[in-house]
Image (cartoon, rainbow, N blue to C red; front, side, top):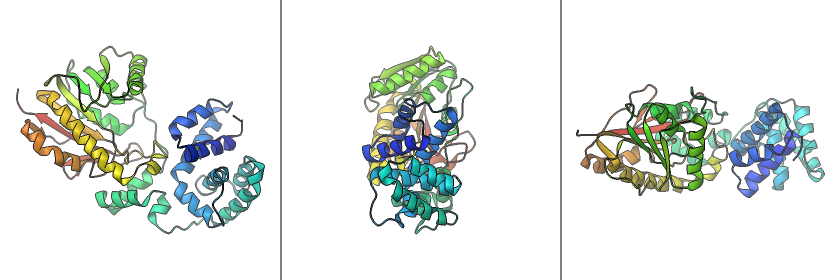
Amino acid sequence: MTDDPRRVAIAAVVRIEQDGAYANVVLPAMLAETDLDERDRGFVTELVYGSTRMRRRLDHLVDRFLVQAPPPTARAALRIGAHQLVHLSTPDHAAVSATVAACPKRFRGLVNAVLRKVAQVAAEPTFPSLAVDLSYPDWIVDRMTLDLGPEAAHRALKVMNQPATVHRRADGYVQDLSSQAVVKEIPLERGDRVFDACAAPGGKATALAQRGARVVAGDRRGSRARRIVENRTTLSLDDLHVVQADATQPPFASGSFDAVLVDAPCSGLGALRRRPDARWRIGPDDVEALADLQCRLLAASAPLVRAGGWLVYSVCTLTSTESSGVVDRMQEQLSAQGFQAVVPDGPGWEPLGSAWVRLPEPDGDGMAIARWVKRGT
C-alpha cells in the first residue's frame, strides 16, 4: 500500500463508506500490506476507527464550509483531518499539511481550505443536537434515552465513543470484562455438560471449558464454527467440542445439558466501541427482528436443560426490547416448563425491568442478562 499512515487511513475510510466493508475486517488486511511500524499502525487505527465512529459530528463541522458534497476520497480526508484537529489535539499545521499531502493532488486545494477553517472552530465546536454532538443516529439516542433514562443513556453513549479497553484472561485470551461476568453467572461443577448455543468466536465457550465444564459450542455458519476450533487449539482445550448447528433447531435430546447459554445475536448497542461502523449499519427494525430471533433461540434451548439445570440468556445490547422485552415474552413458556428466574450473583448488575444490565464503563461493555433454574431433581 504505502508508508504514509494518513494515506492508508483515507483509503480504508473510503472502503468502509463506499464499499460497505467492515472496519474490523478491512483495516487489518490493509495494514498487513504495509511496512508501517507498530506506532504508525496504531495511529492509522485511531484515524480510521475514530473518524468512522464520530463521522456525523465531523461531517457537521466540515459541511458548513462546503457548497456541495465532496467526492468520497475528499470526504475521507476531511474526516480524518477534522478528527485530528478536534479529537486528537494534533497541532493545526501538522494535521492540515500532512492530511493534504496524503490526498490525491486534485483534492488538495479543497481539503486544505476546508481544514484550515475547521481549525478555527475546533476549540469550541457547536452542534444542533445531542445526537450530532455524540455522533449517533437520532433513533439510537432516542431509544437509549427512553430505555435507560437521560442521564444513564448520555453516560453510556459517551463511553462508547472511546476506544475499547483490552483485557486478557489468565490464559491469554482477549475478552471484555462484561463477557467474563456473564460466564461467572453460570453455576457449574467440574464435569458439567454445557451447551453454548451461539458460541463463535468462542470466548465464553473457552472460559467455560477452563472452569472444567464439558462444553459443546455451536454456531450456524461453518466459518464461524472454525473460529471456535482455532481458539480451542490455541488454548489447548480438550473438552470443548464444536458443532455446526442452527440453534433454533439444536440437534440434541431434551435434558442433555446441565446448563445452556444463549449468548444471542443482537443489535450490539452496548458494545459499539468495538465496531465503529456498527452504529451506522443497524436500524430500529433490526432490533425488533433480532428480539424475535432471540425468543426463538430461547424457546429451542430451554428443553435441552435437565431438571435442576440452568438456562442463561445474554446480549451485548441495552435496548429493553432485547432484554426485559424478551424475558417478558418468554416468561409464560419458561414457567410452564418449570423454569424460575434467578437474579445474578455477581456485582455490577442493575435491574432493567425483568432483566439485568451492566452499563458501558471504561473497563467493560454494556451487557444484559437473565437466568433461570429448572425446578426438579
